[in-house]
Amino acid sequence: MRSDYSRTAEGMLILRAIEQYLPENRRIIDDPYAAQLLINSQYRMIAASSVLSQMLSGFLKFWAPGGQEMLTIRPRLVDDHARELEAKGLDQIVLLGAGFDTMALRLKSELRNCRVFEVDHPATQVEKVKGMNRIGKPGNLVFVAVDFEKDDFAEKLKGAGFDPALRTFIVWVGVSYYLRPQTVEQTLSRIAALGGPGTHLAWDYMLADVVDGSSKDLDALDKRWRVAALGEPWLFGLKPEDFPGYLDRFGFRLIRDYESLELQQLYCPDRRRPMSYVRIAFCERI
Ligand SMILES: C[S@@+](CC[C@H](N)C(=O)[O-])C[C@H]1O[C@@H](n2cnc3c(N)ncnc32)[C@H](O)[C@@H]1O
Image (tube, rainbow, N blue to C red; front, side, top):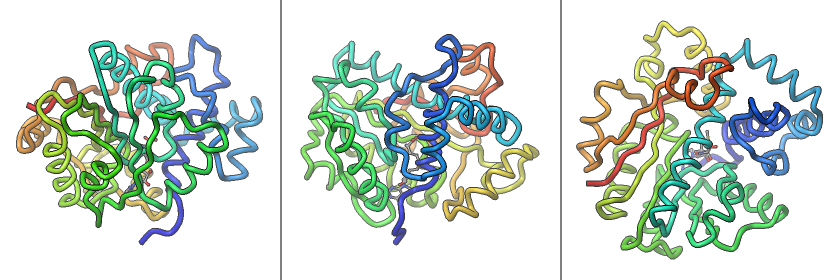
């Protein structure tokens, strides 16, 4: 069992933290909480300094082109979707593999009537709980510690107060590619069984040719190697053309599968094209 918190989850935090130093009209997501949750002392030093943050943003433009854009668009897009669903009536949100995401804080007022369940590996969640207690954990936030490879998260969620009869939005981003294909299938089957028809799911997936190494995208292959060196290799991917059929097997219909050019137009037309080897999709249980 992994005994330390997820470094890739903390990577998402530092990206949102340095994003805050960009002028408002260029910033993709507002997240004043990200810097406060950082654990790594070098990251904390960077996030405390406008100069160092802008230097890191500059470095990332070359080292991981479009990475800062894509990985700040992802939570922003999910927030926007959550707001939309909330306006129509939403009772609960489940963040599967929540990491250090701060949606419960970012949307504290919009989601005040909605319960937010954060499900994550205990090794990461223990650090998240410490950080959220320091900042001020919203009363509607519930933590559920789960190892997807071993535990039935649906049972654990129900044990924590999740009600399958209520209107639900499940967010499963930044996670599936770190899991074995059979774990992804098992997780999707459990998601499908968990909520009834009308349950919404946000899910991002990695392109299959990046995971199997046959992609021509050298940046993607470089990142594939680097996450493996961090002990969190990418194990699962899909081809976009196979995606609707894959979802269908689990009783989901695809609403929208966003690719990077579309996301650039929506959120950062005057910035770099977001990295294109991860796609973000919204689906509904039929
Ligand atoms: C890249 S992070 C993404 C975090 C968050 N969803 C975000 O977008 O900022 C991957 C997350 O998946 C979680 N994860 C990976 N393998 C897991 C497992 N076997 N069981 C539970 N959580 C797992 C990690 O703990 C981590 O929080």
